[in-house]
Image 1 (cartoon, rainbow, N blue to C red):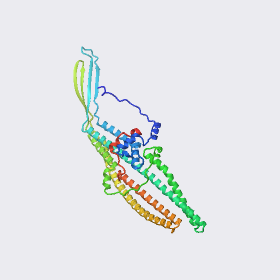
Image 2 (spheres, one colour):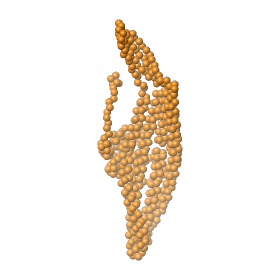
Image 3 (tube, rainbow, N blue to C red):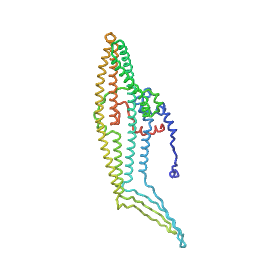
Length: 454
């Protein structure tokens, strides 16, 4: 009985910015909790510790370390608390009177009265409150998964930018080396009277442009690495110790039946449906409030020795406005949710068609670029054989190698565009289009295991 009457005590929990900053800086992929998390997500134990970090590994790091998920989890827990509040029954009240009579009699001049108030909720109001809170709680739970997808999407896009910059920088470095060799050979030919100064000037201008492009692309790598580290939930010092997977081309994917899947499985559509259910429950609640609740008040009194019992009741009559204002407001809110759902579906269909068209266009451009590269590689091999046989000079062979580098740049650029449009298409669907990454289950995402790391 004493434990049931116990009260909770207030426990202060101040925010310590310095301590939090130090904890963020000390995050490490070698943390035992993170290793246990990887095993729980079915990451192969024979590949631990991770030696090569790709989209899958960095996404798991982000899902474990990134604070955005803890924000979503906290919002869900707040919605769960509101659900508990909605399910609580009204408290019973206690009332009493003490009277003293001034007239002197043989009986006691005191009157004692003790009563209780028993509230009775009518018309299914409690059930409607529970349904409304459950709908909002479900929407908050789905938003955890939506936040997780956004965390993964940022990692995938940041990783692609980083990989592309590294690959592009390597190609530009080779281009600078070839253009330098060509410019030196043309200078020697000009000195021998076999080339004009215009040819030398053009070669030097092209070399300068290539050097500027190389320096610009190389300079982006550090900034892109910092962005990727932040998106993966790691400090820059921890990220710099990782070996990141190089840029790779992806296989073409089948785009059939994507619209049906997008309209049914998108997380924000599921959350919108949950919010609509909450709005529907709110309307039922406001309609039920037209019918007043009743409070029963049984009491017992001792009036100058006479024992008296009574049974009273009270209720708030809704004869004037009949809750019309709140019913109209709840009805309008439900219509807002319907309109927002329809607008969301329309937007998803439009974005999906646009993303599919962009992906198909990028795929066709990549296919053409690969064909040009294959043709150029054959010419380069042919020129190399001629050079080795003495039928082509070094300038001709180097120029052919440069043309091969230009074709490689075009292939890299188009392959990068394919991956960009593919990631955009995945954002529309809110799921990966291949098996390179599997999102954790909703239960894992909603767990509190990662809270201590933030």
